[in-house]
Structures are given as C-alpha cells and as structure tokens.
Length: 152
Image (cartoon, rainbow, N blue to C red; front, side):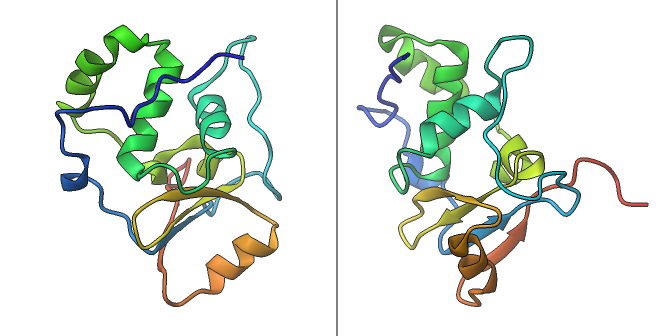
C-alpha cells in the first residue's frame, strides 16, 4: 500500500489561522444516492479524490484538522513525494479550496464528517448509531453537505 507522507510535519504555514470547524457535523447531502455509507470505488481503475479521502480518514479519526486533512488527501491524490511536501504546502495554501461540505464522500458515498472541540475530523457513516447521535446533537453546528444538483 502507498504510504502517505506526513502532512503534519514541519510547516511554515500556520494552519490554525485557516481551520474553522469546531464542534460541528457535516451531514450527507439531501440528494445523496447512498442509503448507507459505502466505500468509494475506483473510476477507470484509478483512485478518485474520494477514495484517497476515505483511505486517509477512516483509519485516522480525529488525527487531522480540516485543512490538514484536505492537504494530506491532496498529497496522496497527486503522489507528492516527501521531498516536495514543503513546496506543495506553500502552493496548496496559496489559493482557496472547497470545504468538506463539497466532498464526494458526503455528496455521493454517504459519509458525514464530525469535528470535535479541537477541530479534529472523523468520518461517520450514514446508517450508523454514531451518525444518528451526531445528527441529533444540538450542541453541534449542523451543516448539510452541498447538493449535487440544483434544487428546483
């Protein structure tokens, strides 16, 4: 299996300035076709961004903040080597990126995202007891994933 370079290694970018989700739950999109959480599949025998996100976050709950996670998934998806990490980090954070509300995991594959008080994220499967618990938790900021299609 491919080994992810550590996106938490020394950085000159202050990630604490850009992370924003704390005590929040991003639920699956209203038009998500999945009835339960499903592992993303390859497209044309190639891993999609959703595949990389799934492989990175599922075994590492609450390890990453929003931005750390998105950068780690970018590194994996693009195959960036350890030697290129610092330059890639500078380049990646020089422009804005869509938040996890736009992730295919929440729009297509039935996965929600829970952020704890420290802003660390975990993947939560639709249909699980944990998903229902977070969905009903009034102490969490409840956010829907973005829809795949415009509502008419």
